[in-house]
Length: 72
Image (cartoon, rainbow, N blue to C red):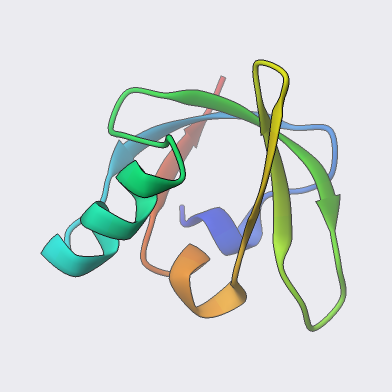
């Protein structure tokens, strides 16, 4: 499953970020393989807002399609 399929309120674990450039972008956001995040908001046609700790991160829809996750 990819991050763009997550629903509001779900907790997910990042299991793979295949593309090296996407992985570098995600690390800049504080997300790496093995990280657990919560979907705070899913804006229709827009970004997905994730919460990790006290930090909120908005991930663009195209980027989220390249991040593989599993439900926690």
